[in-house]
Length: 161
Image (cartoon, rainbow, N blue to C red; front, side, top):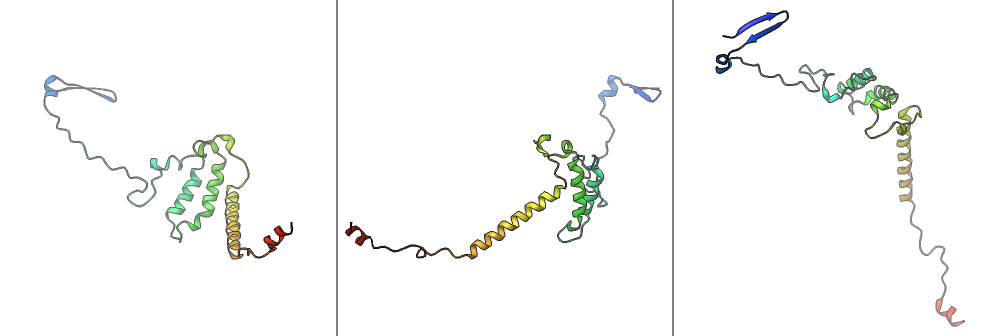
């Protein structure tokens, strides 16, 4: 039988060779599975390592609002009503490029051009204009070979020389 001695908050157990010779009778409970992104009640697990600390950073509140909006969205397409929440989150994240920048980018790669969504809108508009022009090009018939070319008789011009 081991000797047990308590000192304050600590318990000291002295075990003999005989104590170690017998197999342990302690049964450990089955480990609980980690909940992942969603808890069993369907709520978002903000402590999930899969979120990479986004829920607790300087833009954590904005991230949680945007992510919640998307997760609970019933719109078609999903998250269509969350544009403003994601825009607010993006605006916050632009203020912390060292934390929220893309991997491999240096701080010099970031610029302060105002609303980050404006550049995205400009890209979409430019793509729209290009596709509009491409459709117009398809409508124009190719020029005829006959137009603008003056026919000459090569044999007559060679004979006169």
